[in-house]
Structure formats: C-alpha cells, structure tokens
Image (cartoon, rainbow, N blue to C red; front, side, top):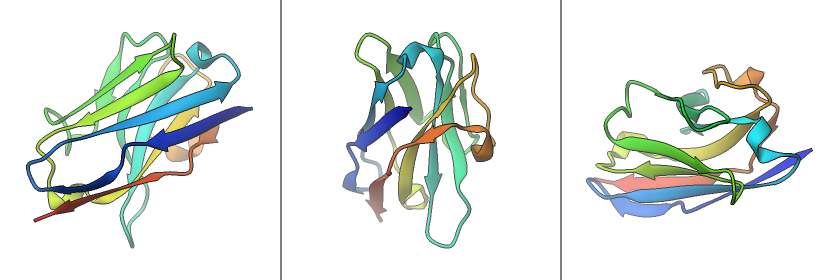
Length: 124
C-alpha cells in the first residue's frame, strides 16, 4: 500500500501561484511514477502533469504547459506541483496519483493509488 497526502491548495487571484505537495508513505516511493490530476465540478478527472520514477522525464497537459512544473524529491518521498500564472479555469480539486511503472500516463484508471485531493480556487 502507498498512502498519499496532498497539501498546499487554497484561494488565489488570477495570475497568482500555488505550490502543491504530495507526501507518500508505505512502499518504496522511487518505484512509482507520479502524476497530478484535477477534477472541476461537473467535469471528468483530467491529467495535469506527470513525472517518471527517476524524475528524469516529465509530461504536461497542453492547458498547463509553460505555467505548471512537476518535480519530485525521492529522498523526501514527495512530489510537487508548482502552479504559476493561474487562471480561473484552473479551479479544481487536485489529486496526486501513483503508478507502479517507470513512466506516467494520462489515463486515470491506470493508477494504483490516490490521495484525497486538495482544493485550488482561482478568483478572477
């Protein structure tokens, strides 16, 4: 089992920044590729960003490229999502997810473990 706990959400004005963190415990963190997904009210859960288990490869949804940065610290069992130039359409619950594989994917059903989510709200 892997337990994931997100933090760092909140309310911010458009153009502002938030940094989300996801702390993992349980099995070996470095065995898992990690991703962030988000879900807005009335919408399906969507892939935001992913990072390989080594940290050497990242991928992003087109809607966040150039604004969001995913990173991980395997020594601290933590993955981060730095969100800059936030827009009202970024408002959602953000979820951390772990996949026992070298690389991430965009399909949420392929992930093995999920956090409880953290709310990020961007006001206009």
